[in-house]
Length: 266
Image: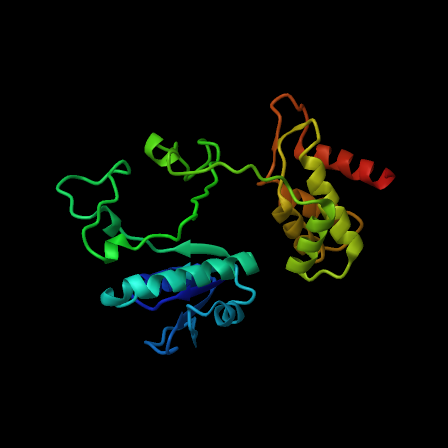
């Protein structure tokens, strides 16, 4: 399970912390005082959220950082920007996923059901708080057949930019796997990364795997024994992450066996 750090102990922050805890995750809530009601399985720490260095130290090693802070209403225009900027900076430094609570204040008073096409027409200070100039919204758009995805409306598409990202180099992926797993066996890390990278170019695969599959493969393989430990770990790690072509006329196990044989000959 992952490690999650939530800034803010209000209604949203507390509910998010409890939901994550109930899923078995490691959860920490950070506030200015470090106080608040004690809840089983949730750690509390004091942190100055607008201080990026202090926040980075408090969130070292977490998988996700949640911005659930809610300054006093009369302080929004002053307190929100430095907090948001600090959390974004920490996410950039650490690679943690940044999740931000939002609201509908920016739309201002309306007398009809809200849609994404409505203009940002707030008439009071809090609703006029905006991202810094140059801020861009980026998103990933997965195939619509994936669970929990859907087509983006034209209104939303007009608010997103497209950035095409390539995979990391083999050296970078090996470094990522070693760092994430703490594995000292460079040979195991190298083989896992090589297998995963092969799924992206092998003609029998319609969809290959990311470096996360190599991380999982190493974590599984080191808990197994026997000469086929890596093969079994590869099957376990890749079954849910790759797709074979409809005309592959093979199973994942046989294709992986071919990949392992080819890698041994290199």
